[in-house]
Image 1: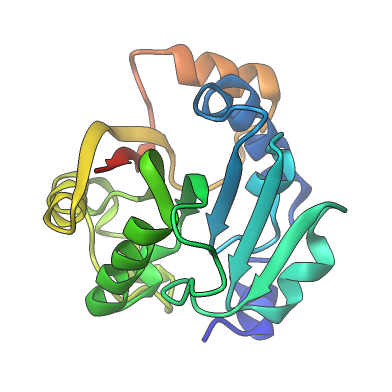
Image 2: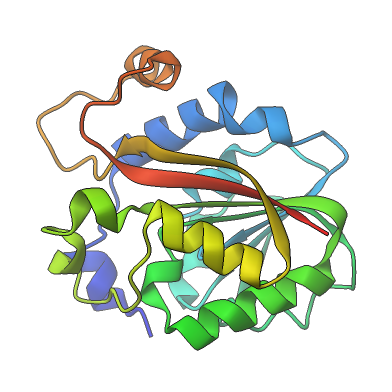
Length: 212
């Protein structure tokens, strides 16, 4: 279980992350989400993504109880493992999002999460996954002591398809691995980075899949 100590040592509150995710939502992810959607974020942490979403229903799921203290008013909070989504109605979710979470789970738990999502997502609804791409960050991958499973853009696409989803887009170099650097975190720079065909330091991947 991800503990308070992990958040203090490895994943402390950093206002730059809110700048990053607000910009990513406005300039990239918002194209996939309609105002009447029900959106679920798995492994929501501090809620940087789900707080930025504009949708009819926003749901944050995380095993860390401290998550609820960081969510905006109107965001529903559910504390528990992401592979247990029994609290959601069948075929009630329009868009599911998971960033930097699957690598913290055993492969069987990732499979269980995908199986749960198959029944909770509406037919044709989308699943978006962002995470470290082992092909480009193998040297740093296990610097995070809670990383368990290894995924690259290729293995993740195969894994997701093997569990019933149709992968429609994979971006091997979506974003830099971390904001823990001297590089500034400005919305304009993030917007330019997203538009650039060249992705320096791009070690995070992005996958988009459809529930069949």
